[in-house]
Length: 392
Image (cartoon, rainbow, N blue to C red; front, side):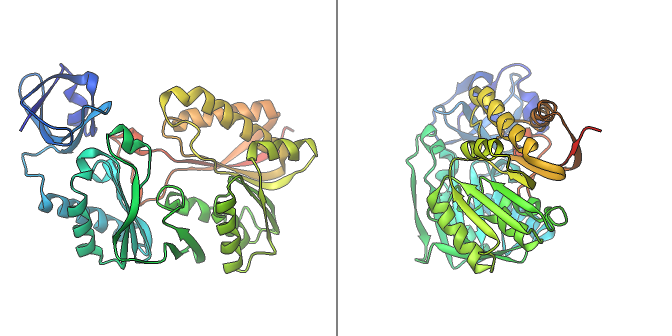
């Protein structure tokens, strides 16, 4: 087994629990290896630190699997997946949930979502992709799903030297799966929907609309398949306008509204959200509640400045259109936009809008998307709920 020897002091993050080793942190590599192989990790004094898989094609050259001298085999992954599943059974309704959340469950690069009796998996790193067949077999043994679908049609795999692909791994089934979330029926498209088909990470944030939307006129921007709009209707909103630029997402959103008996309450509009916010603002349109749940504006460090401008623009326009005493529900799923940066953006938008914001609560992702304190990147979703007030 090849040895990856870290530069002086670069071992400290690994000791604290950080799961990545970047290429500029490595002093040298001893021994032969192929991309995706398991390697041992040592500090500059030749002290064993752990074991992980290596891929020199990636800036994240080594992803740490364990800090013990143990075999990386079927038994290893079986134990890790059981641990992840037992955690979910303690803290969430596991009917539909995230089963494995990569590094936060100590299985770097692996995502597993459960939609009723269907599993969707992503193997996003070369090292974990080599174990895909074993992982599918383990998931089948532990959860006994009706079917398993692969959603590896993501560009990050190409960075790892892997092809994009998707398809059935167990069984042949209708890829539109009906799930229950907070008492609502929602159709999830596991074949063509974004990510694994649905954003389970917002489940608890959607439930937080209870109370603030009762009797309200709501604008749900970037509505995707309509989950925030559906929850608004469930919790008593009088009227919801839901906007998205994707015709396929809105087609499913309309089906979800019909499925729950909310078609009369929700108006779906296919348009660019940035454009419609300008249009609504210029026409003097106002709302009691505006929900902003955009896609990630910053997919890398070099996109941060542009992302900040984008978040600032949509939040500024939203704050200006919210009636006195109404509420702003604003989200960011960009990992590179930290909670501190996001809150600075909201504060700046508030100042420019000449309004006051009262924080109701600041939330993160659902509990089945755990956050490791030693791995700050695992905290990626921010959801701020604010009351908008006139200056008095």
